[in-house]
Length: 333
Ligand code: ACO
Image (cartoon, rainbow, N blue to C red; front, side, top):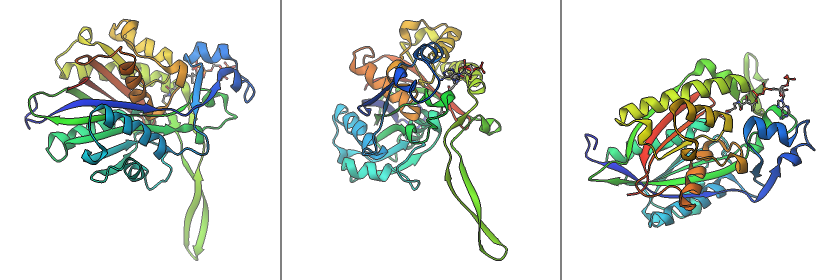
């Protein structure tokens, strides 16, 4: 138990994915690639892509509604909603729209951006509000629609990403703390490895006064650098979080990493000596869904009955920024 005497329990989870599916074979009609290459290099077979009719807020609200129901709460009992996303419907934020769609009229809501690390960063942020006693029932959502921002003519990135949303409910507890530890990091020196950048043109408004106007350009990525970063930093951050929790890798029931690439999942598990049966992977079906990937994989594993109440889980997100982080938690009250 931490010094404030207030702990955290993760009591509900939910997820939502679009119904449209793009297979590896479908992609061969867009770019020079093959099912064999994509599957061997990434483990991805399909990805779910949001139609123009569905927004990030709707997908997020679907996942959150399920998580709230599973936690046996009603939307009006929620105090705070944190939406981790890099692809809001509105640059001013989409969390308040999610609050309205849920009917969570007593909740304050805000967006948080940390790319593929967003869910872990948001979970830790939620924990701070709970541990200080400010809020008791918090919904943490990870959601992204990267298909809006992928260059569908760039084979080195378009094969990787899919769309989705996942959510958990965190509640304050008085006699135990199920968030056992966390570690968060950023390294802006490597910012150029992975970007979805604003690109503007100079526009003059009057003599000696220019501003910039433009839009966000599609995702660019140095895949090899990101791969090397992930394989080096993710085992390290999990080891640090395990140390803080006074646990060994053997004590873990499950490892849920950001679903970026099966080869990254395998390399991290191997380095931590965690057997493959304990590694949750749903990359084959969804690809890299950015901030959604961890809560989506978590929710599926809970619904499939793999993850059970009381199981100890290590999770790690990593991605643009660069950002990375890990959390060790126990599922359920
Ligand atoms: N189909 C066929 N060939 C391809 C494709 C494709 N889709 N993409 C690239 N190639 C080719 C390249 O052109 C290259 O050809 P060349 O040797 O003739 O030049 C060859 O395949 C090898 O390319 P590499 O980039 O070296 O392939 P690599 O084995 O590194 O795999 C990949 C690429 C899958 C992108 C890998 O580097 C990776 O997974 N990186 C990490 C990405 C990641 O984890 N991102 C997470 C964060 S995402 C976020 O934060 C939003």
